[in-house]
Length: 402
Image: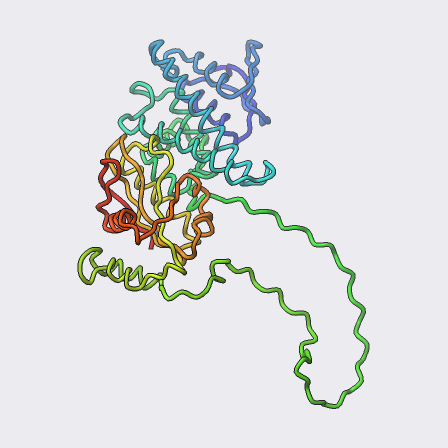
């Protein structure tokens, strides 16, 4: 078969993979010199650039492939899913990549969280749709499947880590199904699996070079003399103190968080001799505080298990504060009508120094609880006992941070 044209791309370019996979499934031949952007130079003189238009054009060269759908309705759905992925997943993933790599300056955690929330919302939409289907449109692979799978695989190397993957198991299954099609051999590399998403690290400030000190002059031998109280017997430069977490500088507390975690794990929560009784006997309100936690965007929650996985992901990102924090957070309600709520016990009087290690901490509301107040106390106890009810929604699943 004579080549239909020449495709200019690079081996790692995601949109180039979309085009190559489309051509492979449609049986369209092409020449492939290495280039820099997706560009098409047709054998008939027709020239085109940008990934999706090229892929659509190549799909039209194989009209019997069904890559653009078999009806006008299916064709519109193919465009719909591509557009959603391009505008919501690809855009926000790219911005996250630029922020973490320091390519967008200055770095802003709230902006990072905004991109992250929008990306996760779009991924949840894709996950919900594909959870009951093999392909996004119809019963065979279309350009929508190729495009989505290619860009999800690319996102797995940016910030779709294990916690994020746990929220979109069907989307990951779909992606692996597509990229491992026999006809796509040589197009896709193995999918990257990130344990945790990369985070922004501020560049170190360059220190001005100091001139080398002159060699010390020989010292005359001195006879020992009585040492005065204010004598300094260290002629060297003191070592720079290691950075400490400010929470470690708080006054010592009588409440031992590790002992509490063991009590909670080994005792019944309520009743005589239970962990709540232990808590009230030992709690130090000067050294620790109790907080209510609520996810800000319950309208974005869909499947209960996905919401519970979201709690797990949040807890994973709080790992650096494990020695300062205990949490009991759950999903309340049912599919498409749920919320995330619970309680934290944490070191110190303020929540931010403990939770800001998690990039998505600003997606949650935190309110300090007064356990001397009957209403706050009832909420706290119910969150720990996993029988919390909020706005008529009952606890159905949850996780502990211990």
